[in-house]
Every structure is written in structure tokens, then in C-alpha cells.
Image (cartoon, rainbow, N blue to C red; front, side, top):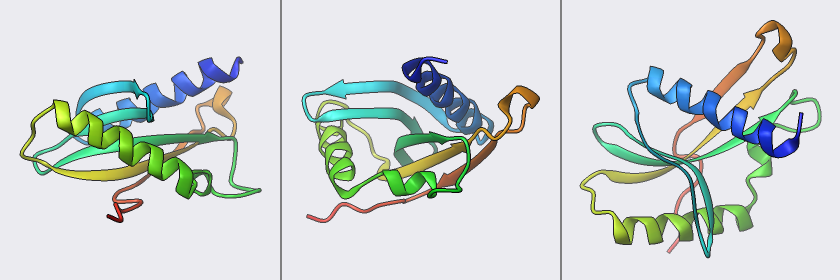
Length: 122
């Protein structure tokens, strides 16, 4: 499957997972000059800026390890821009959702939601 299509598939799986956890999906694939946010989702207390990482397995490294400090800075900058234009009383948070496909043809998908995966260091 095309890498971009596979990424979108993973983001949709992550959104389905979040909906199942009673999150409201506010936006997907928010892009600005600073970077892109895969999913913006909210619950009662938080507005979560979610980075989705899709891998076949964790044999080489865990998917969250691919959210580098540079990537975190781009996500934070994009989130700050989004927040400047979208008023909310909810506390911002940065999450990572890891999706391991394993044998996806058999429905063997593992999702790991890491809340507050990284912090804003101002």
C-alpha cells in the first residue's frame, strides 16, 4: 500500500479508537507553516494534539521513539498556532498513538495511546 494511504489508514484507526474512548474529533491533518497535527481531539478536560505512528512491529524500536525532539517542536508550534485561532477552556496535551499492524490482514492491530507523551518546555 502507498505510504501516504497507509498513514491515512492509521490516522483513521486512531480516530476510531479515540471516538471509542469518548473523545470528540475536532480536526484531522491540521497543517500550517510550522508543521502538521494528525488529530486534534477533545474530552471534558483536555484538548489533545495527537501524533499517530504506524509500524508493523516494535522489533527495531517502539513507534513513539520516532517522535523526535524536532518533531515535538513542530507539533507544539502548530498547536500554539491552532490554539491562537480556536478558543478553548480545555487544557492542551500532547499524545502519541502507536499502531502496530502485525498481521493486519487478519485484524491483528495493536493500539497504544500515550497521554501527555511530551511537554512544552517554555
